[in-house]
Image (tube, rainbow, N blue to C red; front, side, top):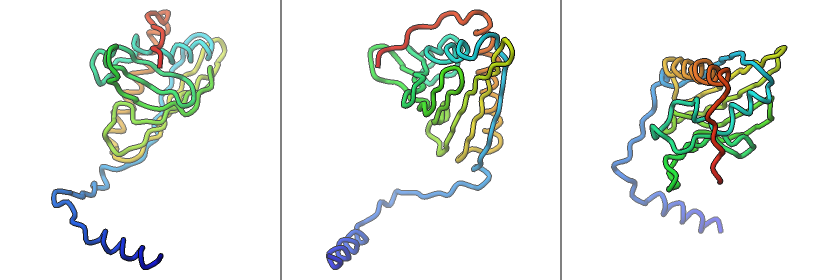
Length: 185
């Protein structure tokens, strides 16, 4: 048995390797780990804010791979996802992140790179919904690590403020109009 294993390993080591393969170490200044936090206050209950933030997000989320997605939604259940479907007739689309925790009116946690697909990185985004008198504090905390330097981390931080402060908050305060039913899965 040991002799057979040694022969297999020796044979594997003699196989030709691709001459076009390139292994390149990233400079350490392109690697990093960051915690980014943004928060906004919105009127109403945490459950209402959570319900508006999940499901169809196309009325307020304005960054996409396709430019004009047929469907854009967060399926808020463990194992669900943050989906972008390019058109109604195909299976073309993007899973931007996977839902790893869903607690209606309290917490939504996503694991995935969102718009930075294709980079060697890890993002865990936690969205907390907390009652404060007659309003809700929505806090987005993004833990990111990998192929992300301080410049890109600052951009991601600004984009999250854009999503919750400049897009979601005004849309929600204006009545959260335009949501569609989520597509069947």
